[in-house]
Image (tube, rainbow over all chains, first blue to last red; front, side):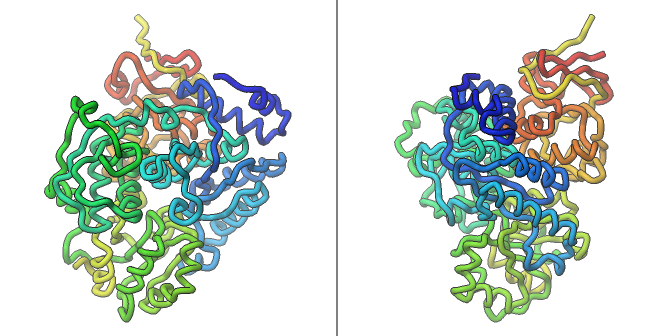
Length: 408
Length: 135
């Protein structure tokens, strides 16, 4: 792997032990993927929730701080595991909160901005076409690659941190033109009707692909999806398939002028209404009792929060309802009166967290929550492994179910 | 005759152990109870099985970025497989292995590693040289 003089100096320890660790880590990863060199990145986005990093991860971060670690490019964070204003009522412990506090202290000392969001492309600073970035959170990466035309691999926490410290990442995977071309075609024969449908479409495609190294070209969409719809589709595709990039024929930047004849020999898969029904049917049935309703994964945009607020207004929920959003959207939602409307119905809006990243297993056990209903196709995929029996419904039906205590 | 399968050079130290194999994919977040050290996702083909100290052999890595931190956290608690072999690793698992110094290999030239190995095989994994040997 080629190193320029600056990179050699980092490796030599001339820029301190923290950058030395970072570039050593990146070289190991680069060699694994046969990267020939590094590429500069404009931003890093790090997943660093306390459940994932644990005590070991916090100690690692604190050691880096002690070695003088400072990020060299704008570096932001994914959702936290604890809303420090509201954790005891969820059954989260002081120990969990303390890991979170220590993580925040360590990250802040390194110059990392605690944005605590997985919708930074809607709220912070979206990357631009051709922009090389080092993003964590699979939903962030797939949106940034596909919708913005930026270039990022899935960067796990340690790698995103390393990129923040060195300002670069090994040039492999989605940083290379040849890995961004379609490998399979999908023809959409049933047009998605709501956010959940868009998530299901992403899930169907992701399940079919099942690999980081496949790129779908999605054809025959009759509408241009909005940002929230693309967010749900991408997050589900990445969750079910480990997929980091999709192209929407004639819509997304790298597929706008794409000549379909060049890809005529690729497998073409039809997606019909029966595929949507098949996926839905594995997640709950009408009349099933529910223990909790969750709106999260990804965090809600201001537009989604407004919709939840309007649907919740003057309702009285029989089961707990948890809504997760970013601190940026939360502040606006307070100002606009949305939080009040939602919480008057008995729901709780958390800021800077996302349900599955906040000790979902322990929260479930502490509150005896097992049957969980959500409009997020991503979250119902994840939470099966956390001891839940997840169910899927539209946002409107989730609200009605919360009022009734069962799936409508 | 030695039974050796060549692969792309991997990450981590040379190790040996007993194979736990399935034709399924892998995510530390989606599939594991990391406290108990078992597969906890009911739909996973290794559901209920302990992965501690095993040479885990699976098809591809999947899902979220959390696995990168999680491998390190599991390694520090000594609740971790000895090695993970994939047909194809995604970036997250490779980064996690690099951070945790966990042995990981993928891209086997002899074919599908989940067919070439079976649960119970005793193997040596040499990531630097890029091979697996059944012993």
